[in-house]
Amino acid sequence: MTKPATTIRTEMRQRRQALVDDEREQASAAICSHILRSPLFMRARRIALFLPNDGEIDISPLLHTAWQRKKHCFLPVLSAHGKKLFFAPVTPESSMRNNQFGIPEPVALKRAIHMPRQLDLVLTPLVAFDKSGNRIGMGGGYYDRSFGFLRRHQHWLQPRLVGIGYDFQQVRQIPSQAWDVPLTGAFTEQGYYKF
Image 1 (spheres, one colour):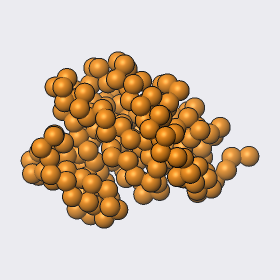
Image 2 (spheres, rainbow, N blue to C red):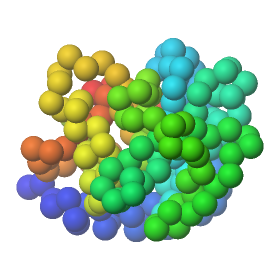
Image 3 (tube, rainbow, N blue to C red):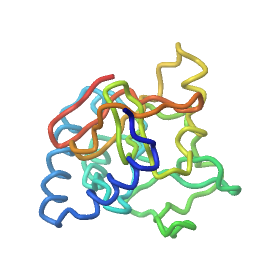
């Protein structure tokens, strides 16, 4: 029997938070290495990343390499109403401020903000995922609302929505809802899962 999403979320967050710093750092290094060698990353020009929160994998080391390779990097920012995500450019000179959840966001002019459709690759945090590409996040629905167009338009090839997590976060099955947007794949410390 499939566990409810709330149960899976609670269990996985507890496991993630229980990791020691060495375990987090080793997993982060392995995942960043897999991403850097991935054709998804190599081909992408506009890449959205995230800063870690609540025990998530830290992929911020990718920023330096991406900037060296002349890629345009973005971080999620909450919309004024807090219902969707937009993406602000991030550079070494970017000023940051915390959003309502205490997560740093780049301070950017409105004209510099990108819509989800303008990105090539979106590396997204997750709490759990399954082999069908279903994802459980923190429960706010931000990614599902922001990338809902991918669900409605099967021919839409970009952006690629790729989850980032620990290998133990893969579960047998996640109950899916009509509004859920499936992942293209997921990176863990063990490699890349394509869905």
